[in-house]
Each structure stands twice: as C-alpha cells, then as structure tokens.
Length: 280
Image (cartoon, rainbow, N blue to C red; front, top):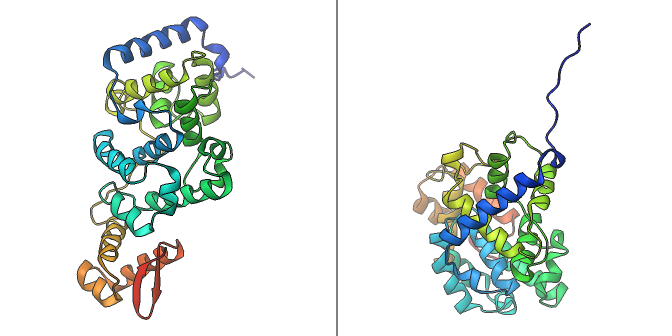
C-alpha cells in the first residue's frame, strides 16, 4: 500500500530568523513613517491604558478618542471610576455601543480597587478575576504600561501573522502566540505592539488580506443589541413600566419581555413596583 504524503505542520522552527528579522524591519519601518498620534500613547498609566483597550474593542479609533478624553477628565483615576454612580458611567458611554462593556469596566474598577488596592498592573496578573478582561487585554495593559518583554495577539495581530508567514486561517491560537513571542524585538515591546496595531489598521487590513476575524459583529439595525441600547437610553432618562417601554420601542411584547429578562439576569436593570430601573 502506498504512503500518503502529509503536508508538514507549521511551527516556529520552520520560520527562519532571517524571515523574522525582515518582518520586524518591515513593520517598524512602516511605523516610523505612518505612526498614529493617539492620546493613550502619551501615557504609561495602567488605568488609562486599560480604559483605552476596553473602549477600542469593536469600536473605531476615531470614534473612541473623544470618549476617552472626556472619560479621563471625568474620572482621572480608577478610584474615581469605582466610586462613580452606574447611571453616570452609562451616560458617559452612550454612543460607543455595546453598553455592557461600560458595566464590565465599572465592575472591573470596583474589583481592582477592592481586591488589589487600585493596583491595575497587579490585577492584570490575575485577570481572570476581573470582569471583561481577557488574556489579550491583560497583556496589552502590561506591555503599554511597563514595556516588559511580553506579547499579545488580537484580531489585527492574528491577521498580520497569518498573512506574513502564509499560515492557514485556522492556525491555533497557541501557535500564533508562540510565533508572536519569537517575533518580539526584546526591549521594544511597547513600540513593537504599537507598530503592529498601525500596520494592521493601515496596511494589512481585512479587506486587503481577505483574512476574516474569528468572530464577526452581527447586524445592528433591528437586532436585540439595538433594542437593548434603546432600553438603556430610555431608562437613563427615567424609570419606566413595561407598557411605556412597549409604546416607545414598538416591538412585539414577547420579544421585549425576553430582552428585559436578560437585562435583569445580567444585573443591569431591576424590576420593582411595576417599574424597570437601573441597578446601582
């Protein structure tokens, strides 16, 4: 019986140091010419970097900048945010989308202040205990705050590695993180990751490469996300009954009840005396 020739699996040892060096030179040269001047690149404050990372999730940079700057003026330290009323936090977030991110950020601030005495970097070492913070965000905060020799891989960096090293789109995360570690120029982690962000946003885009993110944003118009946002906006103005929300939103009663039930389950809103309102 004949043998089947199998294509060898890609691993870091199959990527030469020469190729890695060329990749570094390409990205860093691009960055020197095209680097973006962004407000969170002018700070090493872990709180401000955490804020920027959470705001930038699924939101365009140009849209985030004014929100970020206003947020810092309102709550300049994580202790200020932890003490802020939830309603004020949500009001400041309105317009950024995905309002549950604001609630997670607020809860994260409370956890960091309570459990870690406001030490954001220490909290990032225990990111699984912090609402809304995953491996990518925790590493990014440490990289941009301390310049430690760490790596992180988001959807942009994933796309760059796949395109530059001709990897299959289903390359496992573990291998991508391993390749990212081998590509890191030691002592330049902050600069390197800023360079990768700009290279992915301005050069190796999704449209140019055809490499799609693993998770795709669903259509907003008419979605439950849009209705949730409208409910939150309404309740920020005043408490409301089911009938008032139904008249305002103009959707099927059963659908509205399902969305309200999820919001209550997520401890975003509460229901008492026939009125829906925000939980503090």
